[in-house]
Image: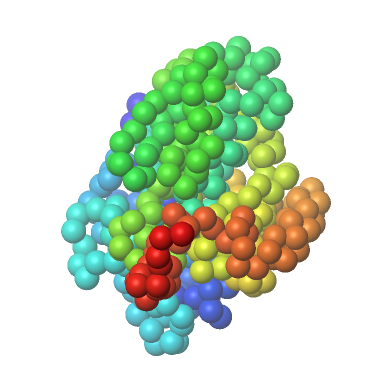
Length: 364
């Protein structure tokens, strides 16, 4: 059977107002550009946003890392940047780190999550998209979804899931990867993914079928640009049901907001607040960090949906809890652990301050 490819590519090309949202003109320009794509290139597409990030969801038969698909996304973001500049939006084109497309948007600024698979008789897909945080934000939820039986009872009672899953983890500093087989290597996995600023879960595979179950974007903007240009605002694709975690099990980790790095100027820890698309407009201290979850049924590559999962009132308590956490950590102001540790501050004013004071440090 022919495989379908699902590509989710995002970029911040101009905030409205400040860093809080995307102007409707940019979303319309994105839809217009994708609609005008060469006939047969895309099977289907959906355009959305979380905070100031435009997210392109595309299905096609071109496979992952395809130059035509990536160029289409790049051209779409360039067209949106043109609109952003006309409107004098903040940070117009900030995620586009290159002057010209070079075959693949990886390493050029936009975040990318892609997977290729044979569509099942029923193919539920959940796409998580976050703003004001980094790729490591997915570590805890993905661990709970695919390795924690207190979250996912299917690991215990579903024969197809009982064997567990393989976790591909990337070292974003050394640019290496390692795969852990769980549950037998669970503790080894946790040593690494508990440090989400460096080690991120890239993809997860079923040990029963070998099929891909989840994948995420792992681009780090500051590492690519050599300076602070905004947080990475990652995306994550999760397949559900039929030997994989049920939709409710995939969503369950977000019922309690966990602390992630990002928020104001990408330099603070804060709660990841689940919200519907209509409320994905972080404002308080440019936050708190937000996550949306859109559900689709794939039908011969067509995106049936979306269902805006976190618009459900069942997540009202999670939002209340996130606000309580935000109230507390904000009282710490410029002090850790609200502010990120020094090794995460190297792309802010910290190096300049150290240079200025270099001659004033003396042996104690």
